[in-house]
Length: 147
Image (cartoon, rainbow, N blue to C red; front, side):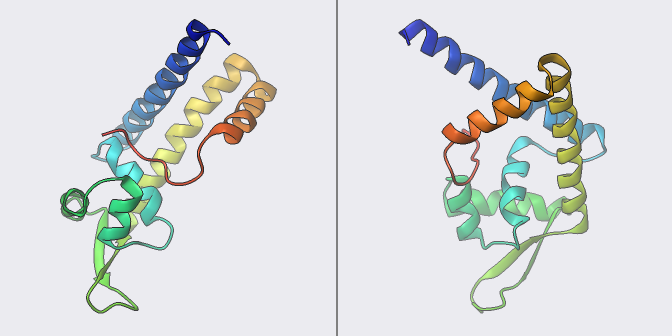
């Protein structure tokens, strides 16, 4: 693959990821939730049984202080609550509230709408192949925003 082909492919992937993030965020807002894309990246970690601020910071690839600021915002908006940690008395467990889970469902619905548009444009088979191929090259681990 020549450099121009590689640059074209990377630009298309980055543009698609950016557009998907924007469309999901717009769908969440249209469904009555206040937010920004960073919320979704945090929610993906918290939806798996909660996390501490330290674990959330590692998941997002940010400092503990930055994660704490985001958590404060999410708590103020009613998406997340702090609870006593079941094992570590010094730590607080962050968990999604019902509002946070509803926001996550709104994001899933918005994402499904975008993928449905891709299916209408490319066909179901091509989208399935795209998902499989991207699954082979995508890094395993947390999906992080680019700060």
